[in-house]
Length: 232
Image (cartoon, rainbow, N blue to C red; front, side):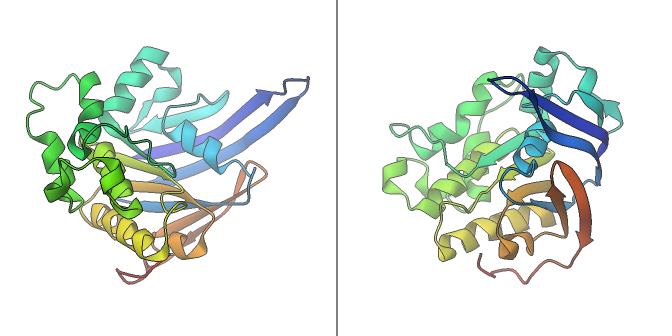
């Protein structure tokens, strides 16, 4: 599904000079894969996630998505592709406090060009086990439930690829386990899951782990996912 070849990303420092956030990154991610990207702070893992999600543009190398080079697309074309095919889950839930769970989930549909969007929001909430919480506001939900609403929002356009940046970072062990169970289920259903984490227990839930250091992928480990229900 995804093939990165020689990806590089350089930033200009405000006071002069450059920072090489990614350097010669090559990585293959198959459809239905679950991959954890791990590394220390500043290693480049979030930059790599942003490149995968078309939130940032590599300045070297090629990014192929289903065989098409998306690095050459203009900003508008990347935005359309991002909306149709990629869902995002962040450490901070980014839910609108005055909106219901269903209204939060339906936000991406505002920008959708799909012909029929009726029922998609409720279906996404049901996928994460929160169909009965559709009218609740974030303040009426636990942290784990809020993150599951955020996952439902990522799923509402039925994307092929779900990117999760530290999805359990703000959660206790029990809530983290619930969120990881949802991500496990999505992977079993054939969605491609890529998550960034600093937690080895979270990474162990994925089929593969890519370790990044100094902007380079230094190792890719194949592993069997831990048993469902294990906690972060």
